[in-house]
Length: 181
Image (cartoon, rainbow, N blue to C red; front, side, top):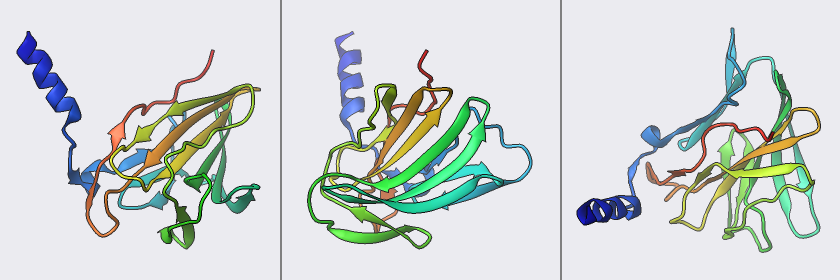
C-alpha cells in the first residue's frame, strides 16, 4: 500500500512535457451544440476556440487605474442565456515584458504576474479552468455566462514553457461548465 501511495505522489509531481499539438485545448461551451457551420475563432499552438458561425466577435480595450487589458468579446446566445467570452492578458501592476501577437493581429500583453483576474459582483463565481504552474508567463481566458441574473465564470491560465518551442505544460483542473444552483 505504501508503494502505491509513493508511486501516486511521484506521478503527481513529475512535470509532463508533451507536444503543443497534443496539449492543445479546445474551448467550447458545454451547452452549445454545433449544428451546421462552425468557426474556429482562435487557433494558437496552445489552444483554440470553436463557436457557431453566426456568433458576433467584438474587440475593445478595457482601461483600469492600474492596468490596461486588450480584451476580445465573443457574444452569442445559448439555451442558458447570453454568453460573453473574454480573452485578455494577465493582470497586475507592472510594465509589460513584451508584446506577443497571439490571436490574428490582436496583441496580448505578457506580464510577470501570477495573480488571477477576479470578477466583480456578488453573483460571480470563479472556477479555475486550466492552470500551469512552472512558468511565470501566462495568459488567462474567462468565460462569463449569464443564465438569468447569475454570473458563472470559467477561468483559465495558459502558460507556454517557451514561445519558440513546441512543448507546453498545462495542468487541467476543470474542463466542464458548472452552473450555480
